[in-house]
Length: 272
Length: 272
Image 1 (cartoon, rainbow over the protein chains, first blue to last red):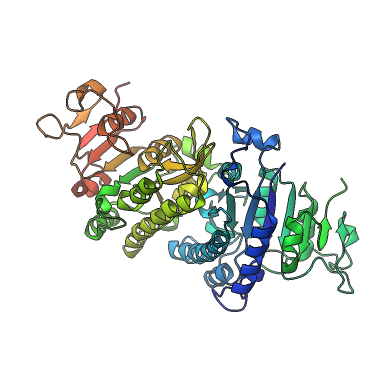
Image 2 (image 1 turned 60 degrees about the vertical axis):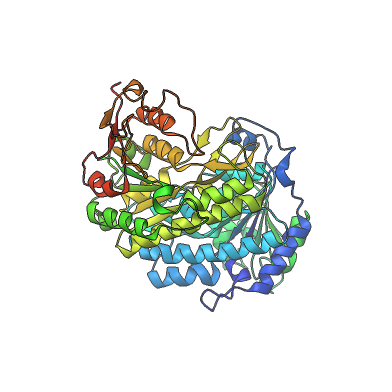
């Protein structure tokens, strides 16, 4: 078995139009779905032991659930005030702390709701773990996350700022964390929960499966221009086709179905 | 130039006998000494640019200050309640969060006092970054810390819990962070501020320099048995002799002198 990665979009768990406002009901529902549908191996006594977690990952000996959440009205508000994006940074520690602190507050809400339901969640703050080089290349070590999984914990990562050569700190989006984690952890399945029920066609119907960009090019406008800081749907579909694991794009009502092994919303998998 | 590492002992900045109690005056004095004596290059416009931070470290092209603080009455209280040590872990997320949360609270105090004085401090939480394998071997990636330094920030690390294969989480002491960071960052100088003014001889006088364990064997009792969870002075001296950088052991009044380039207290450097 390999890990499952579940991304909770920032717009799902926060009120995106009001600064630092949680959507408590939506977060409760997401936490319920996680607690009810995922089998946790408390203490993970049966986890295979190995001297090298990287080898265990390659053998598919690490399973479990990784949660990644976006920034919503917590991160985006402060990032936009400070003018910090994924490429334009700030060398001001105050800017970095404002964005990072807001994201930690949101992360604390997510952790609390999971703990309330017996989910053994532990935080992984990307600012503490990763960095970018001068070309924007991301270095996000993942052995801590893999070791947490192997010990039966549920690592919870989030969009954040990270130190970036020549820029101070820049934004690291939840989506970039998902693609990086999926690769490093050899993820089995990736689920992206956003406010839409899937990738929609020109009639606003959910496209059940996308195996090549052309399948959805009309609906996606044939362009991968970014719609917002975390990337528009077209860019997202291109990234997910390159992922090496099947990805599902679905709405909040389908978190449980995804974790139970179904393929709700749109499944994106490359034929290559 | 290579980085300087300053460790603030937990017993310096907290009231060690009262759970989760800050020694605010001592922390203020430490923050004053840091702000007054260390030259920060805000934004670090002159930092050498390189595509690979690891290479920059090797060339000695990364300078700046790394602060590491211990747990004092924040971490130790919860670790001792949960029975978690550097080798005996807990698979309970509640235990992990209790210790980690207390350490984050202390870290937040340290960051705030530094920010109040214009020091561009950023947190690095070890739980988010590192892990141990089944043999207790520590994997603590440091590129995030190096990139922060190169961008003119002051990374602030702390004793914490970290995921440990077969143990859930175990304690990572501030001292272990110091030795690991000194190696990874090719540190120039290491300063350890504790409640004693240095390594004391049998007459309770500070030994100015130790270049071999035998120099201090009598005073240290000739044994390296650990006195507490973070290791006794004898074990500390042995570790510091292996460090590859000169280390100073001094009391709270000497932080400024150390940062100004002096060698207060006891200087420990191997002749090898």
